[in-house]
Image (tube, rainbow, N blue to C red; front, side, top):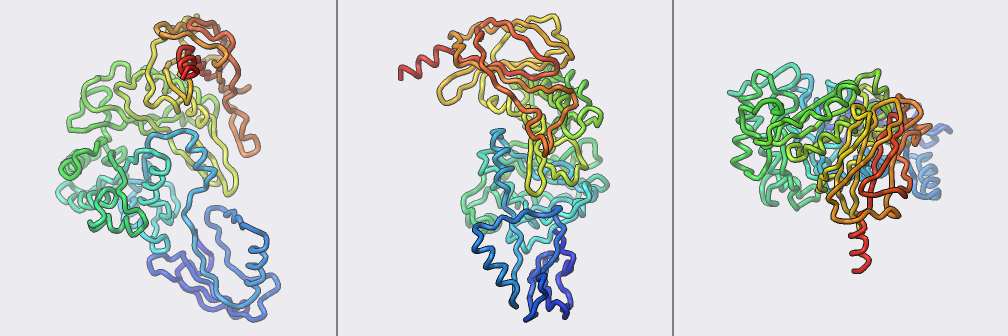
Length: 508
């Protein structure tokens, strides 16, 4: 946030209005204290203007307290301004609806910086907010106050019940690199960050964590060494320095390489490797079989960034993009013996700056909605810890289909969930055969859920936030072998309740 007056921390008094601005903290030039000196202030009131975040909604709890505040600031005195860094609950509720199993932070290119001088520095993002200097995010061309810092990301992962994945800078940006011979200060910095997160309360950096209100360690078990740096001159050497040091200090931490091992084995040790894909809808649909022939020996796959991003396909988040992404995810699900984790492209975007498309959740200062890609991901929220189940789909249009099936359990019932994408312009008749269930199908408890729209490029918006959302209906013909009709350009989930388990729960 950048106040238009006092942004350097000081300002001369303004006699006409009787104001004086003070920079309270030398490390943070945008925090301020405003003194109101006038006895007979202007009828219109006095104050400051802050264009940060394209405006903020301030909710006052109680009309009386708000009126009292208004009466008080017609009078002389001082007002201390503090900008909080809490999460908007409605945005976090949307995130909780996805039931995330991990949180990868602080992001992608934001970690690198266009230049290393503008890379994310974790130790400058901890401690009291007003003492954080902030930094310029030169990749996306905006200033961040770092109110959402390393500590807050760890807290968010904890609140979500998600495993934190700390992506740190490997001494490499888009335009400059640190030679491996002098990388040790970066290595020490990362070890300090892990001590902050995981150390006992008595150690140097973990005592700083305790002072912030969290004496218990955070369970950091994954780190990514760099971001999209494979192929850079010093990546291999730097990677090994980080790997060896972390392995020695924290042997339980799993390390993620930037190098793609899906086509050939890695030439360095790793527990997982990053795989990123941004492409057209047609290409991503065809990539549903990408990992069918990947080696089952060696490090697992972390598909940490995927999305349809060609403008003609995705717009600001289209149905077409979500269908291709769903098809790709069915392939990841079927290859879950080698694909350990997957996460979509950027999670949140402020509608005032759509530099990057697509994103899952769009917001402004007071509204929010999920794109079709957000709703598509709700179909996969039960996939973690579920069991892949073999099915057979018979159709004359198999080239336009992508499918996978799992068994999963809610509080009372075990379901067979069959997810099918119809990526074609025509309705498709098909037969679904699911043998070996060892239980009958209870049609009364079974449902079908469909994501589709009248136009392939339809999008959600603030004015129509629910234009494209999943619609659930009963499935009276549910059985182990059943006929089904798929709508054109649609994503359907058939949830077949397994009768044996319903009876077992009833008897208990």
